[in-house]
Amino acid sequence: MSATQKTPVQATPDDAQKGLAARLSGSNTLWTGLVLVALCLLFSALRPDAFPTLFNIQTLLVQAAPLLMLAVGMTFVIITSGIDLSVGSVLVFAGVVSAQTMEALSGGDATHAGWGVIAAGLVVALAGGAVWGVLNGLLVAVARVPALIVTLGSFGAALGAAQLLTNGIDVRTVPTALRQTLGTGTSFGVVPNLVILAAVVTLLGAWLLHTTVFGRYTYAIGSNAEAARRSGIRVTRHLVAVYALTGVLSGLAGFMSLAYFGTTTISGHSNDNLNAIAAVVLGGTSLFGGVGTVLGSVIGVFIPAVLDTGFVMAGVRPFWQPIAVGAVLVAAVWMDQRRRRARNSR
Image 1: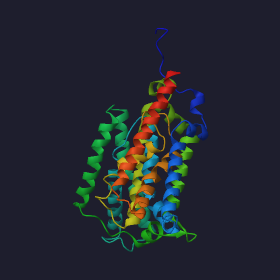
Image 2: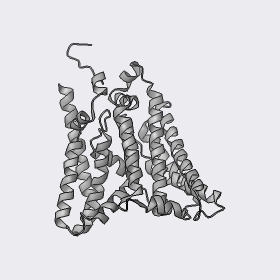
Image 3: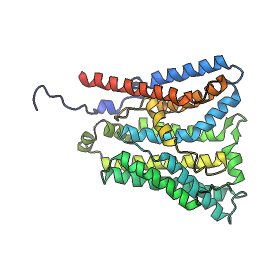
Image 4: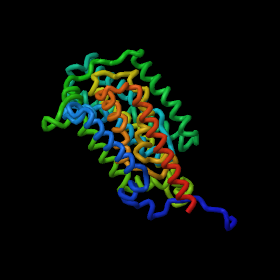
């Protein structure tokens, strides 16, 4: 190697053990957080009678809960320099197999099913998501097929499998106990149970990513997979685990959606994969890998939700919402590229 040739940037032990504050300052998370705060203040000033109300806040949190599960899993995948376009379809598939399992155990109508049947439905939803996640991971890590192609294929396959199982007709006999407890129930009379579940899972995801060996390996692989392999990290096994985790969280999101809507909504999640990716990138996770935080993804999830609700309340045509989100997304990627060029030029 010549003296003028630069070696690739590799993750060092110090990099792998950076604290959350260091990771936040090294990404677009703080900038995106300020954008979210500014949007909330703007819409609160425009509609003080509607936007900052308890009902609106509860609605925003509940609607964002399933997408947040997808975004947490997507954060791990994108940090490894991967992508998963199948999460929305896996959500639908998991909801379908869960609902059909509860129906089968209840003799065809799960409306009055008990908690034993509901628990079985949850296990099947998680297992259904895990199967697709493991399949994606094996094809990406073992067969070395590009993640974009693998997950694009499973995007169509999972949705097609859900439609085959139901003949394209939504399953509507969801247990009343599930809907009243998880779907629409609240704790302390204020906090929706769906939001509590999403918050607990998100905190566990943040703990896993930022404080454990699993998380450090995830960052190391995203920074330089070959260097990680030479340092003793089992890259193939870890990538399979990351995609499996994303599948499990997609299955959980499917179960949460089932509880909230009381139906499988087969045609209602066509954009969830893109929304999850957009949320993660908006939150500061780099599409080039090695950089990202769960907190940033949480912030990124709420920017489209706040824009959508705020535009409706302010009387702005809702068609402006995807334009605004797209502009912020492009700006986030542009800033990430500038940061990477500045780092690599040092």
